[in-house]
Length: 189
Image (cartoon, rainbow, N blue to C red):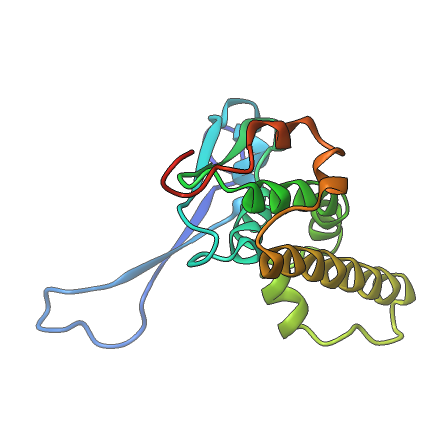
């Protein structure tokens, strides 16, 4: 316990080994993140994170959405974290991808917290993590389910990219698509 009645927020250790020329003695600090959030949770600042994109051809919407989803999954108070996507091209394809990701995030974010998923980027996690074994059947089932949902979402986004536009059926599902007309292009938006 520290002088203020709290556990320390970090531990300092000196490095073992020789001191170079008698002048240098490196130290290492290990932060106890759980203690930090417990002590300062109520006074942590709000954070705004901007993800910027300019062209759905150069920066595929799947890549942009993976970035947005990984930022949304930060280990930070959700009510103090705001994530913005700035699309300089004004692409309806990026808007569609964000719409798809908003539905997927309702399952992805709780899974990240529940199983302490790292990396938090869905593409990186699902491609680098082997399917969980039978030791935890619930985790294995949720992992398989989320992987299937992610692959379906990615396939829908890639299909829209191949066609180069959003179908009229999908456009009718959200009023945000009314912001774009069929003559919008990267130079006129």
